[in-house]
Amino acid sequence: MLLPRNDDVTLIPSLADEHQERPNFMTLDIALANVQRSVPECVAAGLVDMKTGMLLGVKTVDNHPQEVLDLVAAATGDMFQGSNVSVIEKTFKQLRGVKDDGHHYFQEIIVLSDNLLHVFQRGKRNEDMVLVTVCRVSANLGMVLTKTRGALAAVESAV
Amino acid sequence: MVVSCIPPPNVRNEIVDALDAQAAVGLLEEIEQLPGGATGALLVGPPHEPAGSVFIENGRVCWAVAQGMQRRLTDLLRHQTEPPLEPLVVEEVYRACLQSGSLLGEELVRRGIVSADGLRRALRQHTSEAMMLLSRSRNEQVPPAWVAHRRQRYDARFTFEPGELLVTIAMQRAGNRAVGAHAQLDAVLNGSGAGAVFARTAGLAITLPIATRDDGTIGVRLAVELGRWAMSALDLANAISPGQKLVAASTPSGASFMTWERDNLVFVALCPDRMAFARSLAKSFAHTIEK
Image 1: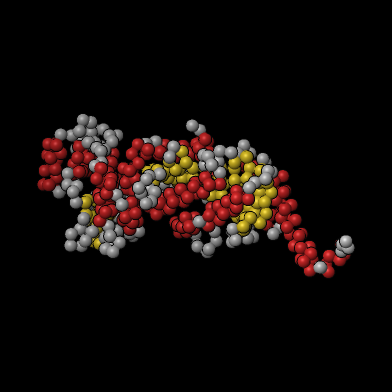
Image 2 (image 1 turned 120 degrees about the vertical axis):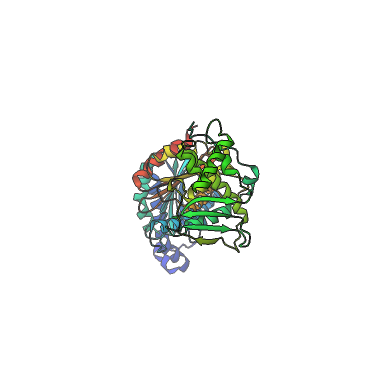
């Protein structure tokens, strides 16, 4: 069977498209892997696009069922954009005399449970992107926050 | 004879059952939105036959009354001492008040028969019960009529913020669960920021705060919205990962909201800056896991 040489890839449209897209996917993958490596006791890191409710990328230490990952992606949207959140953001802005310019008030959400610590961080460049980092609850919270805040820009620029 | 820490006589069940939480919040919000110096009365119910009135001086609630509460204040005042005051004692002071034009409660304090704290507690209880009864008569179609007046006759010490009355109303529903909620919240806030405690109560359309620690931030509307946000955030967190929960949301300025649940009570803390957030986060996390 005659296979195209590497140089010929650009001549085949479908493979050429894949070649164009692959660097971005790879970069996000690497960025998330870096988050997982640098954040203490990290078990998962993912990037959620709240506009579509989709998980753009995820790195986990174990294989997680797709339903669990989908649930986290859906919950991320509700955490930041649920109707109760919008109302409280608006009320609080009014009470504090902050001008309502449509800018979202909640930037970072932490969820602590019996076993896990979830950190949800809204993107600085694109507010619809949220970096979700999950660690064991025994991790040092201060270190987790410092490391995830430091990694946010790199993950965002990978998209 | 002066005793200041006596619990009020039991609230009649029909008053607690009469509570329409949504309407009570609406009424308190209307009062909260009055201009700062507003002085007058809100007449609740049909204009030709009002179900009761709420008297306001300088935007604060002095007194409210609803049909069927004729002897309730006397009853509450009598129970501010241990043993309770004899009815004749109160009647004698009442007669003197009729002649002098002074207010019964304030005259009881002036004579040293009831403490200032006791009078405040009795008035707050009475006003809250009236609000609960009036909530049934509040009609969206016929909003309460505002009758302004200039005369001010109530001592400001014995007047109330709408938020304070909201908590008193919620406490009637929560019963014993409210005991100790304030102290637990204070332990986490440690003197900075504001907060509220909510009880998950079956049968109420909205969640009302049973305790608040206010730095001037939390009014009726924010308190109710905080309750809604806290319940939904905790439910959402529970969907992601079961077990004891704490959810914290922070803003770019460092001001943060935090909620956690313990013993069926939902706590919310508002931290003004990053330092207060870090301190409260550590304390509230310890509070969720210590048993």
